[in-house]
Image 1 (cartoon, rainbow, N blue to C red):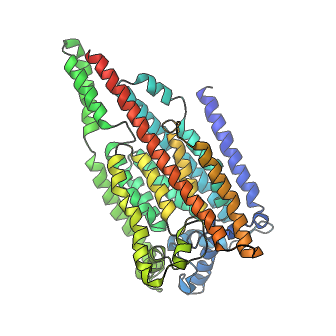
Image 2 (cartoon, rainbow, N blue to C red):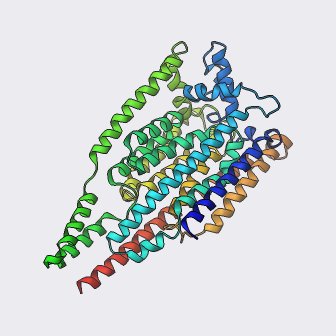
Image 3 (cartoon, one colour):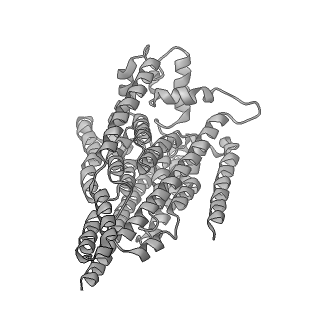
Length: 470
């Protein structure tokens, strides 16, 4: 298939996905997805956002009544669209169109980041002498595959049609990763600041973003480049090999040097964007508690988990049963679990910052206070970026069947518990536990498969160096 045909094929699938979303948008009442706890949470529900906007229009605090817990920026951007009606069209049609556009932009950015990632990885394989392996890696366009996985993922479609603001959150996360892959410090900082402002959990992505800006996209372990350069420079003693020496030395300097200037620029832009966001929020809430009220109603709400309404996470049932005396302790335990995993994973996967970001997103989606299917849509889309490295993943069919099974059983168990009264909370919570276990299995298998791939590359490189020495 020629390159032109591949592009045409890709955009045909994109148009098909957009068409499917637009069709489903016209039947929101029949689907009734916006009321599903798997789709809308207290942080991502458009209904709660509309309530907060109504309170603001009534000269009251948008956080009054404990309905809205999102960003004032979302109220400014999406709030007017919730009250704008087009005669003869479904309610909140304009908000649905915004979410469709956000998904398409996210997929386009994932595709561009995937292409940069694949090009960088292929060139790295060529540097260490694995030309055949680099040609094989270029056969599968991982960026196109990841973009289509994100667009056609049922979780992404459900979140979009279900009027969940997770589409906006996913967009700013992808924007940050894209800016880091392209080594655009201002864009990466803008996406990271907005993502952290909207959801708090993307703050841990600062480590992979810094590594992306400093070292560039994913590459094999850096020690392989040093071994290759020492061998080539040591064996090249003739005058005609000076060009090769210089080229290898240049590549070595690029690999060794950490781009501190870009990282410093990144932090400067973080300060600028953060100040801008806080000033806007302060102006919006100046008559309603200011920034203190913002932090208490957003970050405080996320960290203290006062709303124990059912969702697909594992925390709501636990904190509904735990004694209040132990509540603060277990809050620190669950939130600390995310922080404890940051540094070990960063030390082991520092040469693969994009994959490290994917792992962080899975972990935060697993342990966050109010998860939704929109969170899973993001990391399943990013998973496609590593389709070549993870092609030998074990239990792939079991994981796929598990995700499908949980997706089908969750609404059934919720119906048995809430509406029919023939079940109890344990029925629904069992599906949440199964969902968490499948996410744990997925991240473990992905990390294991990636490390096995790195070992394979190390083994091939070592064998080739030994043959060259002999």
